Image 1 (cartoon, rainbow, N blue to C red):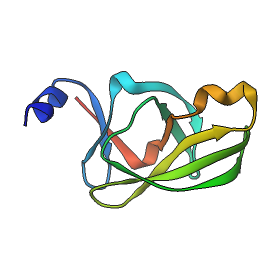
Image 2 (cartoon, rainbow, N blue to C red):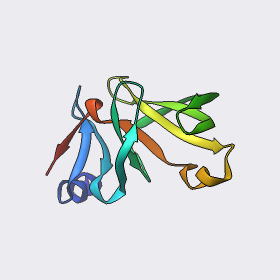
Image 3 (cartoon, rainbow, N blue to C red):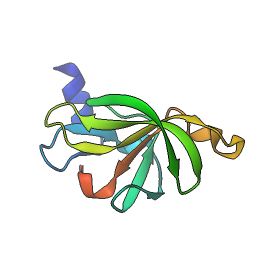
Length: 108
């Protein structure tokens, strides 16, 4: 319960489908990304997610090894986790999370 109390003091992003907390505002790195269906945010950390199987996928900025991420409560596909970048210019994305804007709601 202490963890939930600490989370309630910080702005966070939740699953739009079930309100499950997904990421803290302090983990938001950028709002200038694009997901499968539209605008997306880049986060340094995400919680309450399930990481799917890894696969190589050609994205707008190059080839990556990624894994889709899902809400652990309702199973909604939220975005993906960057596992590997084949382009040295995008190595900084490795280990970070893309969550589509349409899949989350912001809470305070």
